[in-house]
Length: 118
Image (cartoon, rainbow, N blue to C red):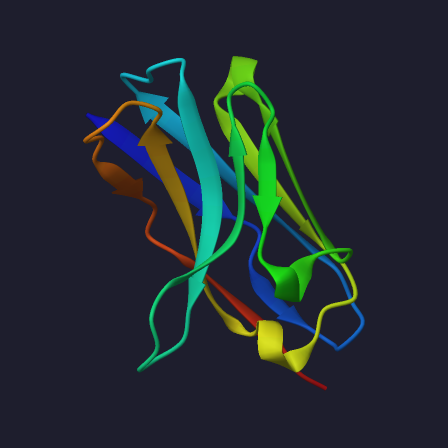
């Protein structure tokens, strides 16, 4: 069983910064991808950023140059540093973990609210 626990959301003014963290616990397979998705009511969950256990990274176009994803494999933790935040970044942010094998399940955290508003 895998558990993901997120932290770091909150309210921030436009142009501000936040750092999200997600710790994975349980039976963690070493070859995995951890990432962040976000969702607003009535909309589909969308990928924000993803990093594999060997360091391959991809970002949504909307966050390139502003967000940075990183991970600490020894701690099974993934981080999302969010700078130059915009109101359109407001969403519930979910941590995701998936094994790098075909047919893997997706594991999700409970979500953390990020609100960008003046």
